[in-house]
Length: 339
Image (cartoon, rainbow, N blue to C red; front, side, top):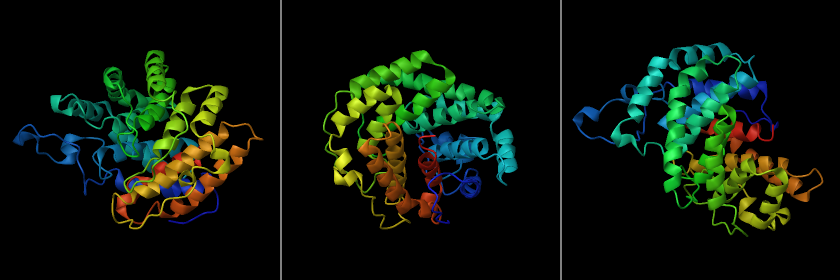
């Protein structure tokens, strides 16, 4: 795709991202299922298992492809793809089709389905739909969103330890996105549960020593934790926590957090994760920088780090399906951070 110099969402970029997502959210194959078979009757095609989210190579990427489209429609309603997005949502986000997704989730063998990454993205999608003036789509999705919120309620008391990874199992990423749903839905009890788990998992952390990136990462375990904490703490408390967590950040240390990852093979689905790492780091650095006073030196350092990471991977959002089916969502997070 084109490599614009702008570091914020523009109508042209929004149109490019929308075209990418519209091309894959209903593309059934290739497909990587997260599916437990309990008998031969469970061997079904993706569309039969998931009436809505059967495209985009895997279920969670399809969910955040819908989030991308919903976000673009709200932010840039004049893009040429706006009508196609509305048509897609009217056709797919219906009570009947959402009931099919809920039916799959209620299978006993689906207890661990998409935990916690897909859970969080589904809630993030619902938070976005709740921000639209037309609430029809949010109303249709609501039963599925409430089911995933219930999964968090049941899971978190058993989650004694955080999962500090740079991939789908990251609990920091899950809490960060689910926070937005709890806020949008006004679910104070769920938010309180999130806050309690955040305190248990992260608030005592000091002087982080990151061993990243790994070849599989699309999230920074270190920066994702910081961005998660930022969402839950008042600004002054977050700044104090961050000063303890990364005390040398204003000097650009640890250096590994400030240098974009090198992506050696974008046709390899796992190595292509590193473009996502660069984009998600840009997102985190921008959000962290926006939480700082204007005269804070760390704000400048964070902005420069975000720009480097964006420049490294924004031009590669499209080109190979191994990245194309998901990277635009992470680019949008980065381009709209701090809004």
